[in-house]
Length: 365
Image (cartoon, rainbow, N blue to C red; front, side, top):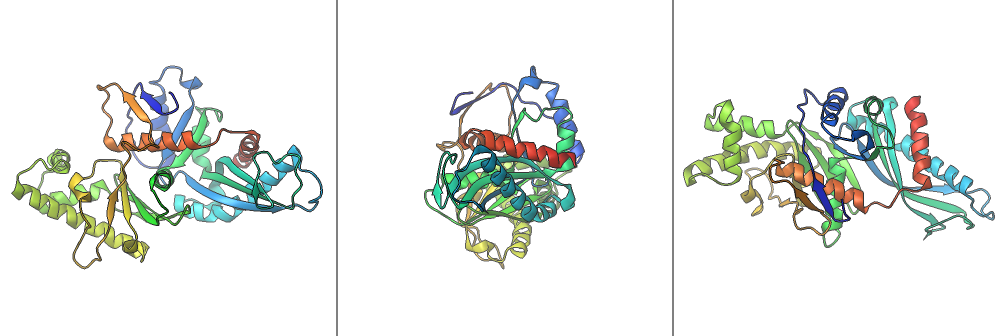
């Protein structure tokens, strides 16, 4: 790869029987066998909300001996304290999000973004005196079982980045929008959707909606009498408006019926959902015409639904791949935002290695 270019050499797919961590890790293991020099590869993982929680935080450490210059040992100790403060504060909420006990939550990764001494950002704090040390960093939390299974066939050094899709898309939108904007984000997958709210560089996971592509397909089958075996091909033509006016009108009405169920669930989760723009991302194609105007459905307020503009964005890498490789547009979007997020992060330093060392201790407990 180059700085802004990503070359796709191969694309492998492996079916997953369930969203249990063991099934997902086994699918990754099967795919890894198809890559040459896999053990030498650096690995980036973009996963569902149940396997990773990204927390972007600031943590303040107050030094007792503020007249003494900071050395490397004390700085590492301060950062360790900051990590455990945040971990203790966030593990319960992360456990609920990932549907596990808080005792099963582990630190998958930590990356220091900035360090401030007495409210002044300092690139290298060593040798300075200060009373307050403020760390800004990202902490990634995952289930212990997932990480242990993952590290059975890859090394910790290989895993250079892990995140959940909602956090990645939220970060991408933050950096892409011309001005600060509060927005909601719905990532739609096969069986469910993850709902996030972003309020000025602070994204929150509000929960999982039991609504996904299967719901859309089921509604189309019920409303239009479609046989199960033709639903996927019908939907593909529907997204491209490749029907006559009569068929297209009926399909749009059915799609609106399916979406109505989703928005009712969304409003139950967040009463302010209709007061801010809603960006949609998905693992499959959504109808292009869907984003052309403000959505109006019976018994619901108007909703500003927006498409995430990834193609052509200055943040997204130029992706080069063999035209014989068949990659769905949703997967291409995932690949773009994953690589964009990774490439915009600062290079790892000693402090990140400190965080990873302590994460290993926690995983072993």
